[in-house]
Length: 175
Image (cartoon, rainbow, N blue to C red):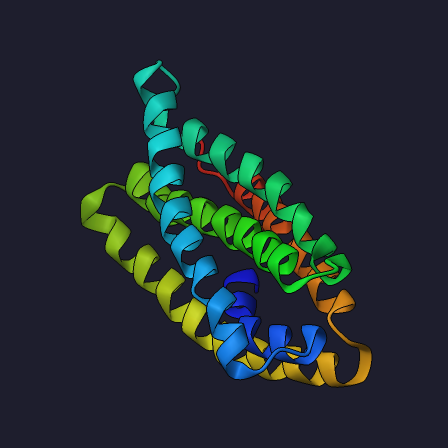
């Protein structure tokens, strides 16, 4: 939900909440995607460092996912940002965390099932994201229209923790 939120709604948020023109919003809207890219690299680097220190790959990736889920809780604070600059910084932190999380979540099937069997799991993750994007974006718009961004960012902030719970309770016990 958070990746969908910020890739589709950052400009709308800055225009609607901080009353920027589209040109003014463009001065800020390019920053979160840069942090998304940095989050992807950082998430992979962090789990690699843990693996290099002897942590099993699946455990390393889960630890990074959990740390990112905790960091993503800051998403709930985005609507409290008093300026477009602080909002952009908070959005950037949120998308950084979810990108670092995603890199590790998408790698877990490789660690769990091996390369030969992981393709199906990864393809299901990608297909699920596409389906969720189509549904969630419409729901985000409906909630924002009626209640503003606080419910969306509050629920979004909790979703990575919920995903960690799913990862934990569905983890494979295979070596």
